[in-house]
Amino acid sequence: MSTKARRIGLSCALSTPFSGDGRIDLVRMVAHGRWVLDSGCDSLAVFGTTGEGASIGLAERYSVLGAFGASGFDMGEKIIAGVTAATVADAVDQARAGYEFGCRALLMTPAFYFPINSEEGIFRWYASVFEQLGPQLRDVILYHIPSMTRCVMTPDLMGRLREAFPGKILGIKDSTGDWNSSKGFLDRHRDLQILVGDERQLARAVQNGGSGTICGLANLRPDLLRPAAWDGKDDPRIAAVVAAIVADPFMSAVKALIAHRTGDPAWRRMRAPLEALDEAKARALVERFDAAAASKAA
Image 1: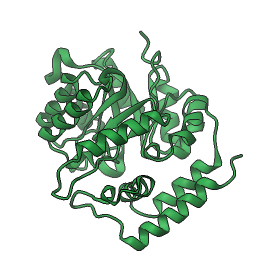
Image 2: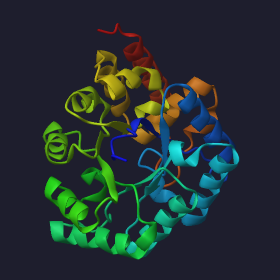
Image 3: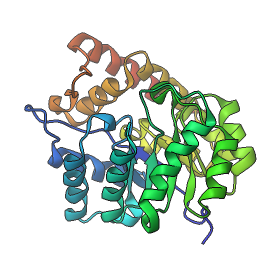
Image 4: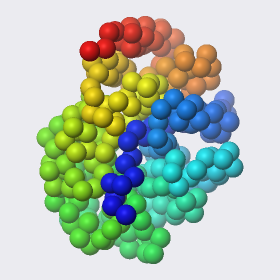
């Protein structure tokens, strides 16, 4: 089957709720995941950047995946597992958790913390993870987010990984927000699933052969994003609501808006070292977001 036969389309980079004692609130997370799918998303990407995935340990990952599985989610269609690790061993363990639950795909960053300036270093890190996964290795979505990892990925690097591990790379999520970066992956690898993280680039990417998005705005307005993700139909409200959100720290802002939608202030909790928006900022955000979302579509 072609890697594009089952397009990712619209996948939500799912936010992670926490209880008062800092543990993951599985009940809220499952309920939110169900709402996101019912509202127009095709799948959920857990443990990503929006989901504060770099703060989530291995045992917690098993608990989250187990909760979705026990709640009847089709893991092979609806759940993408994020992998964010500084060590090869941790990345392998996180990947195996996703595979053990039969997740549709892995969304895997390169190693973070050390500034990796060479393509060779990033290649060797991925290759080490892939080799240790052995026969389990499948359906890897590379995750290009240099603002968080300090690693720049290129179409050439993607090509090397494809050649070294044929049939194992499903695609790439480019979260640079730079159209030239996304275009480079589209030009070289459009036979795979090229996804964007910046919702403002989504329609353009799909028009040029992209396969959709894994993004944070899908926690809030899947209905707004679906035409862009599947038909390449842009909507000026997308850029307007993104601008409203990114005026504050993105992860905290998404949670404040989920709290507003649900009427549940517990959704505002962040895991240290991240912090929730204060009341005044949250109110101002809600006003900006609602005004942007209500603006007339083109």
